[in-house]
Picture 1 (tube, rainbow, N blue to C red):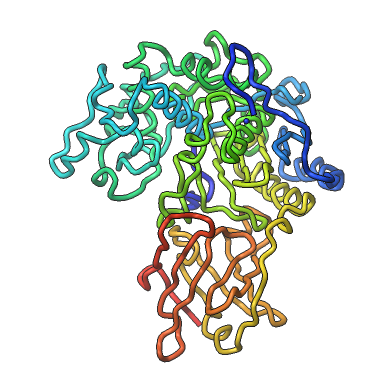
Picture 2 (cartoon, rainbow, N blue to C red; picture 1 turned 45 degrees about the vertical axis):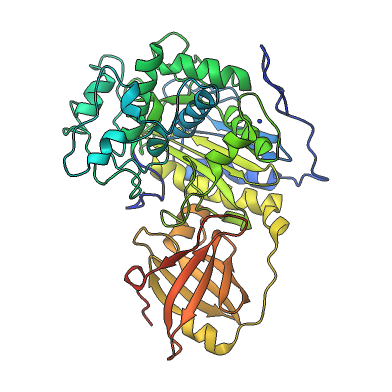
Amino acid sequence: MKRLVIIYLSFALSGCASAGHVAVQPEVTVSSVPSLDTVWEKVPTMIAEHNLAGLSVAVFDGHSIIETRTFGVKSRTSPTPIDTMTAFSTASISKPVTALLCLVLDAEGEIDIDAPIADYLESWQLPENSEYPAAAKVTWRQFLMHTAGTTQHGFADYYYGDAIPSLIDSLQGRIPRYDRPIEFQFAPGSGWQYSGGGYVIVQLALEDHFDRPLRDLAREKVFSPLGLDNTTMAQPGEPGFLVNAAHVHNESGAVIRTGLPITPQVSASGMWSTPSDLATFAIAIQRALAGETVGPITPAIARTMTDVFSLEHVGGMGTPFFRGFGFGNTDWFRHDGSNTGVNADLMASITGGYGMVLMGNGDDANTGPVFAMLRREIIDGMRWSVRHAVGEEPISPELADAITGRYRGLLYDLGLDYRIEAVDGELWIASEFFAQFLGRDRSRMRHLGNGAFAIDDYPNRLQFELNDEGKVAGVTLSRPGSTVGAFDRSMSLIEVRP
């Protein structure tokens, strides 16, 4: 895995279980489905302009896939068109699938995700740490939530002919990209740090405890029950790898080596899938959130995966979905993935059963602008934002003047700059964040009364507190419909610059 989009802009499915597949695609329940034809007409020009080899998209609404589109080729060395069953490396979207597997095994009584993971490790042991003795009791859940405190953000890819490292090699730092053993940076549960290394520990614990490869466990417990026929955690060259696969391409548009990267750390970034399968996975979670049990996904499991446990980190975190995204006035559960030469993005609404999956076989510069355009155009074209329209209250000139200015770290703890400005009597917030993800640099702010604001493309509410001099003294973040506690942005995280 190369990086996690924005999180490090540094930046970083009703049915019951059966022997066969679960039917997870009912008829569309939305009264009318807007046409996205004008969106698709823009794609060929965009992918040519940004030298993207290929693109595959699935759009869903009313808990059903309503559009699938493909563009370009699987490989520029042998230009076979991408089709809807062409699999891409999903990179870090492997993590929520690994988390689901662990939650299913926990529900079946096969593991206890609140028990120390050390009780399940046999071939390797957690490093001793005198500074953080609680690390010896770190739990499965803490690894899945990225609160375990472990290092190693991600891992490099390998190809046929390379010496492929073992999981223990990865954890001991015997790999080119990371030459230090995994370590604890803080006491488990006391902070948050995205850690692919933590997910590798989960993989090793699963394989040690069950004496089976993760790819087999995932196929049995997740892929087969949900009918994900074009999804695998097998790697190129292994039995079960998919024949119809897109090759990875560098920024110049050339195939990287064999085109099929091998990722032994499959829990963190080694899964391959299609937009349709990932949409089916997301729809299963959405339907479970609405009270159904879909295959192995119960309502309780779906809530565990998506409930926000903190607003302090990256605008909101679930287990392990990112919950800090609000594009189109929607509360999304989301995970992206980025390995060298490939990118993927899964966005699904908490309510309403809608969302999208984007997959492209190009590097960041190739996929980034195309994905941004598609997010914006699909959200606007489907009119998803109007489903959650927010009423506004008048804002006094004094309040508008007080909060107008430049800030740092206002919406996310990522060191990003923000600018609140008045335009024709409306307040807008501008940021590089919106530019990267939506291809427009600002989002509308709507006053809810008493200094509280909603933002069209951000899920949290902002409550501005003014001091006796009428200056901003602090900002509190809260999440509508969530039981998670409000979070005060201290002035050390905010720089107001007129």
